[in-house]
Each structure stands twice: as C-alpha cells, then as structure tokens.
Amino acid sequence: MKRRHLIAGSLALTALGNVPRGAQAQATPLPDGNLRVIFGYPPGGAGDFIARLVAEHAGRTLGRNVIVVNQAGATGLLAIDALRRAAPDGATIGMMPMTGAVLMPMVNSRATFDFSTDFEPVVHCVSYSLGFAAAPTLNVKAWPDFLTWAKANPKQVSYGVSGLGSISHLFGAMMQQVLGFELQVVPFKGGAELNNAVMGGHVPFGIGVTSDFAEPHKGGRMQILAVSSKQRDLSAPDVPTFIELGYRDLESEPWFAFFAPRATPAAAIAAWNEAINAALKDTTVRDKMVRAGFVVGGGSSEELRQRIAADKARWQPVVTKSGVRMD
Image (cartoon, rainbow, N blue to C red):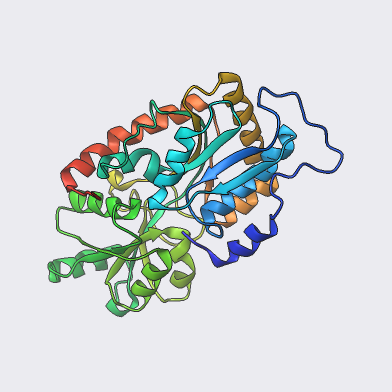
C-alpha cells in the first residue's frame, strides 16, 4: 500500500510527536518519558504515514514525545509479538491492520494470539476500500464486461494480489464464493509489483487498495470495475461499489486500529483514546488522510472490540471454506 507522494510527507515528519518548545507535560495516567507506537511495516508507506500523522498530533495532546517504531518483518508478526511483550503501563501502543488483528490467526499457525483476549483495544483509526481492476489489454471496461469475459474464458480468470494471505487474497476467495466460479490467485511481492503486472497485462485482473489503483485507472492503464466499500471511493468516484452492482456480500472495508498490551490500565487506554480521537477530528489531519485514500475512523475502545468480533464472525467461514493457509 505504498504511495510515492506520501513518502515525502512521511520524511518531513522527522520529529514526529515532538512537543512544541516550552510545552509542559500534561498530567496524564501515562508513565513519564517518551511514548511509543509500534508499526509492523517499513517507513514510507501509506500506513506508516498514518501512524506518524496520528503520533505527531497525539503527542501534542498528551504533552509527550510519541515515537513511531517500525518493527517490520514476518508480515507484521514481529510487531504484534513486540506489542504483546511490551510492558502494560501505557507507554507503548501499536497500530495494527485488520489483516494481522483478525485474519492472520485464521491462516497462519505461527500467529498464536487472539486480539480479543491478548490485547486491549484503543481506537479504530482509518478504513479503506479494495478495488477489482482489469488489465488494459482485455478491453473489459465495466462489470458486465467482466462477467461476459469470465464466462467465455472460465479457465483464465486469475487475479493478482500483493501477497498470499493478504486481505486482497482473501477478498478474492470471498468473490469466488459469492460469484460461484473459480478465480485463481497469482501472488506478487507488494503493491507496486501488482500494479505493474496488471498494467502490463501479465495478469488479467488484480485486487488491491483502490487508492493505489486510482492513478493508473484515471490514465487508462487499468480499469477498476468495482470497489468493496459501502460508499464510492473518493479516489475513483466513477467506479461503482459491489453493493451498487447487487453484491451486498462483497462489502469490505479493511482498517488500521490502535491496540495496547493486555492488562494496560483503563485510565491509560482512555488517555490514548482521547488523544487519538482528537487527532482524527483535526481538520488538517483528516484532510491528509482523505487525500491519501482513507476513510477516517475514531470512536470508543468498546466499538473497536465489537468491530473485531464482527469481522472475525464474518471472515472465519470464508477462510475455512477457501482453505487458504500460510503455514
């Protein structure tokens, strides 16, 4: 989910969370010293941009330095393990994707954790949509064209994704179950490689983050046929949702959210929740998130807990039926 125009913005925030000169630390239930946000992917991507944007604003609210720690590796498992082992004193939280918090334990035996019991929910941060796109070589311009093409080429309906076990891969499995015909997955190493494969016609279709597909879609280098969100994605407003096309079961809005180690005091959770919600309500922060292709979240820690439970209940049957494993 990397976006070149975000890299400069991320690098510009070199002192993220630094308290303005002369600011005095507010009285909070958090321990003294720097605070940390663990993120499981390298600097420079869109998720990292969001983590740093929130950390900077939350740091001002809390009167502390909030440092983003990029604990990349093992498709996010290293960051999850680091958060699980962190002291539950409120000094450390993590920004985690839905893939890690909900889906990873369903497909990977190494993911021996349960976000419902092993972590404390803090707040939902942002959501985004997935786009289903066609290569320009197919002359498939709209969803009905795809159905016609798939009927005529039943053995060639394959879709590229940014990695096995990714949300894009599992959404493809959901599409197969809903549509009733086979879709073969073709994994690539990240979003950039996926984009190039679709644009070059090396794979007929692709499933990826809609905002990552938006620029080549506008330039005619691929055609987004549908998006998974409830409402049309602002980065590609001409593209219908699956709901509009009559597929209510193909609605999905993956997310990033903040969590704390298990047994973190409720007062510390509340302090983080308040600070992050303040960031998400800030006009400048919201505008930057929307321009990056995200839907801004927020809310209570209990609402995040309910979101996790609902997503687990929805995705477990899909994963079980698909047989997808990363072992």
